[in-house]
Length: 108
Image (cartoon, rainbow, N blue to C red):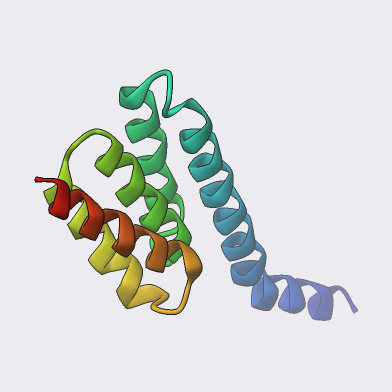
């Protein structure tokens, strides 16, 4: 019985860790958005940590792109957009970022 419990723990631990990383990634991205109006440097740091926590989180990559766009860094915003689009092309946040980048380019 103990061996079965240990085996199940080993089998399911990657799923638990992955869910935990995604949650941490989303929390960091949300916090970055909240502080972006006051402190862009801290927001950039948080959103970088967000994509490190879960590199497969398209929402985190899109949020990073938005933060970089707020910082007037269109090249970085586009780089984060491309990664977000590759991970989640149908995600609303990805489509929103694409629109924001296109609007910013029109302004220039």
